[in-house]
Amino acid sequence: MTHEIYFEKGLAFYRIGDYDKAIECYDKAIKLKPDDPEAYFGMAMVYQNGKQNYDKAIEYYKKTIELDPNDAASYNNMGNSYLHGKQDYNNAMECYIKAIKIKPDYQSAYYGIGLVFQEVNDYKKAIEYFRKAIEIKPDFVDAYNNMGISYSKLKKYDEAIKCYELAIRYKPNFARAYYNMGLDYKEGKRDYNKAIDCYNKAILYEPNYVDAHFNKGNIYLELKEYDKAIKCFEKEIEINPKKKDAYFSMGYAFEELGFASDKKEFYFQAIKCYEKVVQYQPDFAGAYMNMGLIYVQIGGNINIRQGIDYIKLASDLGSEEAKQWLRRNLTR
Image 1 (cartoon, helix red, strand yellow):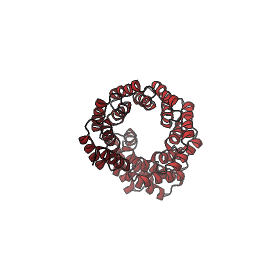
Image 2 (cartoon, rainbow, N blue to C red):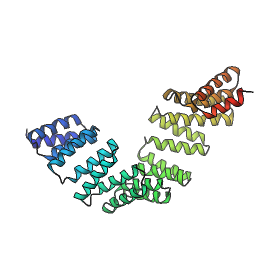
Image 3 (tube, helix red, strand yellow):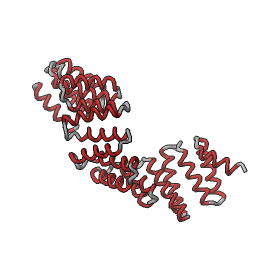
Image 4 (spheres, rainbow, N blue to C red):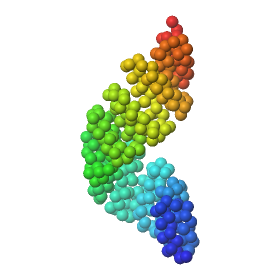
């Protein structure tokens, strides 16, 4: 087969996610035509996006640039590998700057620089570069979304929400933008109703959005709507059965229902949740502490002894709350 056929087959295998066959085809294309930058670029894309082998991706982008020094896309993508794969911000920045020198209107490179500044907590500079990317590409939804995140970090919640709204205008099913807007309504504006609306939209477009279910559940906890909170955490656990934070929050919800009604079935449901927490994280002091308090609350010599043992374990794991409880209750 010819170089062109191997190259096209490599591209086809890459598009369907058969990365090993894509590599095999690109390798044959390179052997037939060692001076073709496109084959090296294709190989780099496979390693970067398919195999997440960023060192190999960088190696092939560098070969592409050796053959075509004005390949802005290779510089940009190499910057992405340095940024997302290796957290090497200096090299990432250098790559993005070189891409812009070759192609001054390269919106993705400006966006990459914005991400670098965001990673190093220089949110004002991040906003500046996200804005430059948007000036070139007004419907750049990821730039709007990340500009919103940067404004949020600066506690400029109204500006952040405007950014998410612009992202959603161009991409109405943008679940992440709805989720981030929910965070700002919850943490920044303390508008729980709007936050829940945003999380609901995120879940509508991405039903398995674990963090949206979790944050929605935590709002219901704060509102003392424990039944609704439990449903959120149950959904989250259905998606990710090992989500210890969801078990912990659900345990707290059952615990509060127990304290409100003094029904033992709620207490035992809470204990089951906390047992799941320590199954996945054996050093989770808060779960042992809460189980201990529940057993003490239930009463009876056996339960109280069990509760004290759990509280001692929480104390051994460093819980100040447990240490104070033991001092107050066992040193009289």
